[in-house]
Structure formats: structure tokens, C-alpha cells
Length: 364
Image 1 (cartoon, rainbow, N blue to C red):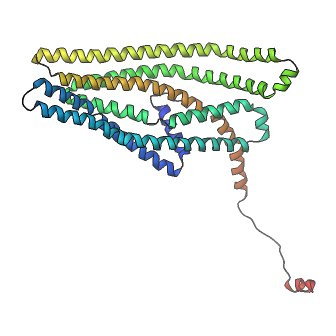
Image 2 (cartoon, rainbow, N blue to C red):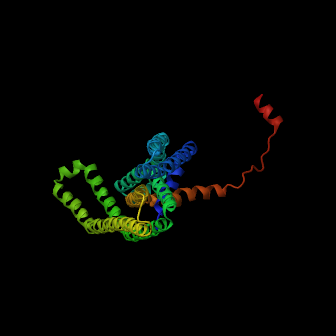
Image 3 (tube, one colour):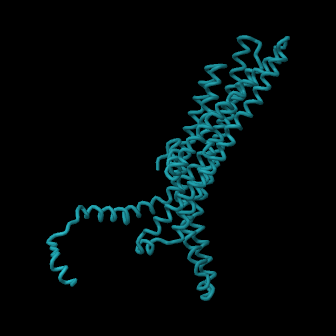
């Protein structure tokens, strides 16, 4: 599995698009456009807030109208945001329902088309667990597709807006963002095989539960409660090592990201204030507030993005969990059907003789 930043997002979007169907694909384009426009509009809030504070700081006869104007703009941005974001969310969640339904239908069809020999070699409990985890993961992603788009748009828009106040502040924010993205990638690269191994252990546990609970009468009749319970505990214990590694590495990841975000934000703000005051002595508080707001937005989006992309890592692994089933279906069912079709190149009838006179005589 590729682990460059965004690879899991691309895979999940392509999968959701594939199972959405023609009509809901058009709806996906609509709600993506709605989310994009809503977040562009929301990016102007710090500008309005900064202008409001600057007007109040400078005072004068025109201060009050300017303050009222910026206050209305600040509130109007929120109203416009929800006029676009709200309806788009409703469309998005309805599309997610369709994606989930079509995905389950496709996997169920694949399972029912598999030969009996395959079912004998693959435990039904493990297969059920893989399908269910894959469906849940795809549904959970499909109903919050606005989040990665919001993170990308607001981060890029905030970096562009920072250039309006200070180019070097914008550059520093972009460089620090790239550094944090690199740190996230390093952690996720190490997390991926550990999560995959943990998932395989979960499938193994699910197979045991399906066996024992599905045959509970036999278990109770033969008094095998203790042995079967010990087997389930044993399978959990074998998963413990990889799960411990997963949660430890995950906590280190979040600690590093949080520290980097705080240090970056405070460092850039402090440098801007010191350099500006050394040059002009007087600094506009509104501009500092706007810069702080945009930096805060970038840092918040990166922190939230780290959570979202981690979830997408797990979701992608869960959806990939049915790759073996799909590959076996292609090898055992689809390829054989195609081979049979290739054999039927033409059909013909040879040496057919029809005697009309003899046929009429036989009828008489």
C-alpha cells in the first residue's frame, strides 16, 4: 500500500465515486463545489475582524461606521457559509448511504458467486468481519468527505491571505506545514504495517467467535466453555504485542505534532511583532490578530488533518481488507466466464436438410 500523504484519501474518494452510481456522482460534484465555495467565503472572517480592530484602534469620525460595516461583514460570512455548507452536508450524507448500499450489494454478489470449494477454504466468520469492517469504513468516510476538502482549502486560503500582511510570514507558515506533513508521513509509514497486522488478528478472533457462538449448543453439550474461552483469550493475547506498538507509536505521533504546531505558531507571531515594532514602533493590533487567526487556522487544520488522515489510514486498510476476496473472485469466476465467452466465436448448423413434400405427406 502506498503511504505518501493523501494516498489513502485518493483511494477512498475513488472507491466512493465507483460505488456512488451515475446520479449520485453528479451529486458528489455538487456538494464538493458547495464545500469549496463555503470555505473560501469563511476564509475572509479574520480579514473582517482585523479591519474592525484596526478601525477601533485608530478612532476618528469614520471609526464607528467602519466598525459596524466590518461587524456586519464578519456575521454575514458565517451566514453565507452555512447557506452553502448545510445543504451540501445533507446531499453528502444521502450519497454516503447509497455508496454503502451499493458496496454491500457488490460484495454480497461476489460472495454468492464464489465456488463452494472457496467457501470451504475460507472461514465465513472472517469473511463477514472483513466485509462489515470495509463497509463501515467506506460509509464513515463517505459521509464526512467535506473534512479533507475543508482542511485543504482553508490551509491554502490562509497561507494566501497571510501574504497580504507579510510575505515572509506566509512562507514561514508554508515551510513549517511541509515539515509537519513530513513528520506525519514518517509516523504513518511505520504505523501502516502494524495496523494491518492488528486487523488480521481481529479477523482471526472474529472467526473463533463465529465458530463457537454459532455452535453454542455443541459447546455447551460437550462442556467446552472453558477450552473455547481460553482459545479466544489466547488469540487476544497474540494480538497484544502489535496493539501495544500501535498505541505507543500513535501517542508519540500526536505529541510531536502538537509541540511542532505550538512552537511554529508562537515563533512566527513573536518574530512578526518584534521585527515590526523595531521598524515602526507602532503596530496595528488588528493586523496581528488577523495574522494570529490565519496561523491558528493553519495549525488547527493541520492538527485536525492529522486526525482525519489517521482515520483515513485505518479506513483505507479496512476497505483494502476485502481485496483478497475481490482478487479471488476475479481469478476463479470472472476469468473463467471470460474464457468461456472466448471459446464461442461462431455458431453454425451443418448438413441440415428439410424436405417440404415429405413433411406434408407425413402430416396427411
